[in-house]
Image (cartoon, rainbow, N blue to C red; front, top):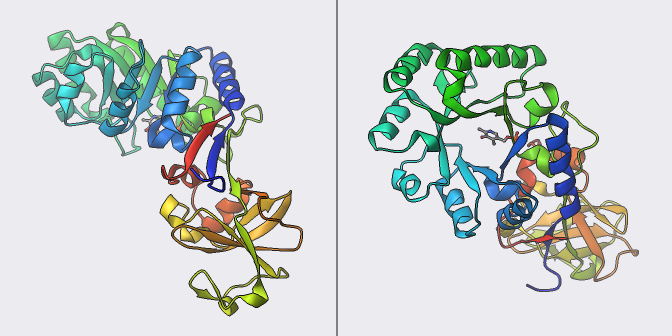
Length: 349
Ligand SMILES: *Cc1c(COP(=O)(O)O)cnc(C)c1O
């Protein structure tokens, strides 16, 4: 790793603050969702950090991610896979691995493969349309469960960020379904993702199942000011050139690029090969507390229009102002860091 390389620096203290704050706020245990490389914060660092802090439940979306956590060889943790995977042998081989059952046909298939129901969580869907057993299938589900007297590890639903009234309605419907199926059949109950934590009480659930809020990334409109953001994407200025000495910036003729009042070009070592999308051209970066525009992005490096105040070796931060980047890129901020790949080191400080 070169001295000028970019890093995602993650503040340990803020992750731990969020973890303990949420635990206390809801008075429930946490299933820490660490999919997508812990939303870009570095899955290995985060899982190990939270494990040391007493967190023993993690959730991911892919088999690949579950295997990654298994490889950390941590004792006494449970891993819940949120999507249905085909490799059921993996569940048989690892009793600490659990899976969401996302449809009735999945349930039948999984049971016929002899997977223990102690590794399964039923997922009920209320029109989110992504994953889950539908409301209209509950009678069939009830029949299967009662016939075989099945007891599961858990039952869950997804309180997506619809409006408050919808959420309360879903919560009520879910409660009714749990009672129909038999509450005693489920060791744990979990309904709340990050938006659900802030907006509803979750009175019948034993666990919260959250990702973004744990990392301090909050949904617009579901804001808790006590939650702290933890990441900083930063690197150093590698070199500076005077614009009058250049014909091109990257592969672009310099006339094609709007430098504003600035007359110097600083090179930094991050590019779309690192997952820093070319669409990020024209977002602002911060150098010495001043804003400067990133004017060109190539595979391995990018260029920033700067003035006399900027020197080689100065620190530059990208995605400091999330709202500004959201406005410019028109993608949710959860995406910014998640797509930064592992050419960029994650460091806990
Ligand atoms: C991603 C995911 C979560 C976490 O959602 P956040 O909004 O990041 O808290 C919870 N549950 C399921 C099923 C998910 O897929």
